Image 1 (cartoon, helix red, strand yellow):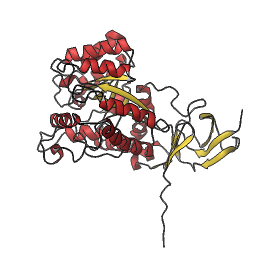
Image 2 (cartoon, rainbow, N blue to C red):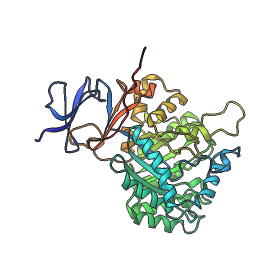
Image 3 (cartoon, rainbow, N blue to C red):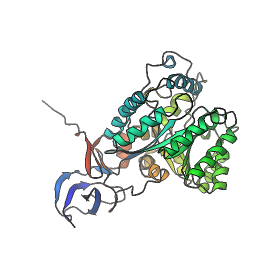
Length: 413
C-alpha cells in the first residue's frame, strides 16, 4: 500500500473508547489506529482530542426558494402562517430565473459546507408556474459543488398534483433529466388520496424513493400519514419513504402517537423534523400558551423510527432566518423538545448517521474503505457538541480539504 496522504492524529470518533489516528489514502479512509501505531502521512494534522464526524447530512432543504427575505410583503407585516408562505412564494416563483435560483442556492450551499454538511437532499418545486427553471439551476449546483457536497434532488408539486394540470408531465421530465427522487404534498391537493397514489405509481415506474411533506398542522383528528403507511406496505417500499413535518404528532394522544410510531418503524417510513420552520409556522392562531408544534422525534426514534433533523427553509417566508448549521438545528430541537442531556448524542445522530440511513447513503461513516468525508468539531464528544453548538473547524471531502475555520484564540493583554 502506498503511503497515506493524510493523517488526522488524536481524533475522537463515536464508537471508539479513546483517541484514534485516521489515515486517508486515495480519497478513502485507509485505517483507524491507536495513537502512535499508524504510519506517517504526507500531511499530518493534530485533531487534539476533538470530535471527528463523517459530515452532517441535511435530508430536507429547499434551495430553490431560499434567501427571499425582502422580496415579498409576507415578511413586512403580512398574515403569516403556512398558507400565506405558500402563496407568497407561488407569486414570486413565476419570475424565478435559472441564474437567480442558482445564485440564492449557492449562497446557502456555501454556508452549509462551511458548517460541516457533506450530504444534502434538496426539494425543488416543479409546476406550470416555475416550469423546470429551478430544477435546471439545482442540477447545475449539484455539479458545481460536487467537490464538497453530494446533492440529491427531490422534485415535488408544492401546490398540488391532481388539481394542477401539467405538473405530472413536468415531474416526468425532471426524472428523465436527472432528478433523484420524488416528493409530495397531499395537504395542498384537492384529492390527497389520488395525489399520494399517483406519486407512488410514478416512483415505482421510475424506481425512485419518495419524500412527502405531510400533516403540517395541529389537528390530531385526521392525518395523511396512515395513507402513506398503507401505500408503503402495499408497494413493498419499506426503507424508501420519508415524511417531513408531521407536526400533528405533537398534538396526538401519546398512545395514538406511539401506535403510529410502531407502524412507521414496521413499515420502514422515516420521519424528518424541521425545527426552525415547524416552530415558526405552527400555533400562530394562539394568542397565549403557543404550542411548539414539533413532532417528538426522539420519542419516535426510541420506538425504532428512522429519523432526521433538517434545515428546510432559509431566509424566506417559511423561515426568515438560518445559517446552514445542522448542529444549530439539533440544538434548537433539543431545546424546544425538552430533551435531557443523556439524549444529546441521539440529537447528533439525527443530523448524521440516521439521515444517512434515510437517504440510503452508501459508504457513510468513519470506517476503512469509506470515502474520507470528515469534519472536525471543536468539541470532545457528541453531547458537548450539541449542547454548545460546537464550531466545525476543518472539513474534508474525499480526503481533500473543503473548508477551514480555525478555533477561536483569546488575546489577553
